[in-house]
Structure formats: structure tokens, C-alpha cells
Image (cartoon, rainbow, N blue to C red; front, side):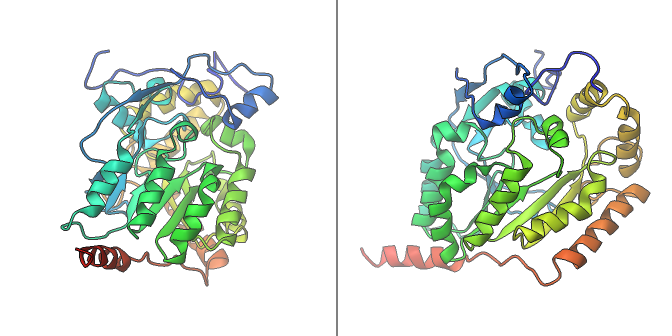
Length: 357
């Protein structure tokens, strides 16, 4: 039962102080369908798209436990509004709050495709898979308007360079034509995030994301077209979605996913305050229980920053979650595996181009 004033259609319920500063457009689409169906009025503050001009677009990932060497983000901030999102803290570097600002003020890097092409053309660049959405979702609502992700996929295809995508948005199916061409040369893999099979849970955790039904359909359609899919059951939040690990794994395996991965929620930086405010307003009957169980997974704190431990947790609750994941893999993914992306074609492409001169 909800308690207090709730900002409909947003995840965060407040703006928190920026550690570094003391301190338009509106898109109405299927991400707000639930508001209309329930007769609710979504938050009226329009989402602002602000142009920024970075000097580079591909980042070297220094964290040793995230499973990627390079990432790129065409957008900073994300209208999806996932309350637990670790990327919220990055908005503070731009002078905004990790709370509502993260969802309402989206920074758009229109030069991303050109910056990517400039990198891939360099003689010194050696091909490594570049992950789109290492921070924020490359298929968030802004992509419908700006199509920067599609343009970057075209660059990857042109230069025969491997890439991977992390998303929870069915909009990825718009680019099925490019994904199929990349898949022919083993240059693409997709990670779809699915945190629950319950629409009620999705609506409060991830208010402007695609429905669970549409995400499962996305996994199936990608898989049916030969595009390898890993599903991120992330984050696992004790007493919110931790009981769904086995049914989630079963559902995504049946949809065609080749593997599953997970993390245990950690509320780093400003996210601890944002999440605590949110759960006390949204799920007041279990707020203390959830917060204490998250602390139990991280040595008595809401956040763990030690590499290798921070996303897997420690203690009995974390062990139980890990055991369930191992069982899920044995039960539903025993004879499945994700293919390794092809890094050889890019070198051949560049060598071939040089022979023309």
C-alpha cells in the first residue's frame, strides 16, 4: 500500500544534493502506457534533451569485475527511471542530481557516430568488443528521436568491428536488420535486462521501461534471428525479486537466451538516499526488512566497493542468491553458451583498405 505523495511515472521521488555542486522536449509513448491504463497522471516535468560535445566516445573500463574492456554511451541520464541504477551517480559529474535530474535531463552526444568512426579508422586501434550502454541504456526513449544507437551500429557494421549491447528496451527490435548483418560475422551479442516477471514490481522499480511481456518477446525474436542473447537478472534485491530467480531463468531460457548473469543490488553514492526515500514511500510495509537484508549482503552497509565482492555480496542471504543462480544455470542453461565475438575481421578490413592506396 502506497504511503505519502508519489511522483507517478518516475523512479526517484526527490532530487538529492550533488556532491560536486550545491545546488525541451517531451516524448509520450509506450513507456507511459501504465499511467494511462491506471488512470494516473504521470509526473508533469518535461524531459529535457541537452546537447553535449565530448572529445571522445569510447571509454577504457578500469573496473576488473564488470566483464567489459571498453564501453560507450550516446546518452547520459536515462528516462527509464530505474530506482536502483548505479549510473545515477555519474550525473553529478555534469552538475545535476542523481535523483530526478537523472531522469529528466538527458545529455545527448550527437557526435557519437563520428567519434566512433574516427577511432575505428585509427591504425593504432586494435579491435576489442565495445559495449554500448556501459552506463545508461542506449535504447532509452531518447533513441526514438535521435537514433544515435542505430547510427553507431551502422559504423560497427561498416568497419566489421565487434560490439555488444545492454538494454531493457524492446526498441532494439527496430534495428533488427543491422543486428542480423552483424550476427552473420559474429560481431554482435545482446544483453537484455529482466528483473522480474511481475508487472507490479516492474512498474515501481523501472517505471518507464518496456513491459516484461515485451522484453521476453524481444529475447525470443533476437534469438530466433540468430543473435546471441544473455539475460541480466540484475539487480537481485532481497525480498523484492530474489524469490523469482528460478522462474525468471526458466522463462528466459525458454525464450532462447543462451546464458544468464546477475548482480546483488548495491546502493552506492547518492543511490542509498534515493532508494531509501523511494522504498519508504512505495513499499513502507517492507522497507526496513529490505534495507536490512541489503545491508546483510554488504557487511552491514548499503554499499560495497571492493572489486569482486561488491556485485556478488557476502553473508547468508548473498550465498542463498548465489546458490539459486548456480542451480538455475545447471537446470536451464546446461548445454548453452554465449559465443566469443570476432575481432579478426576489423584488422582484415583495415588491411584491405590500405591496399587500395
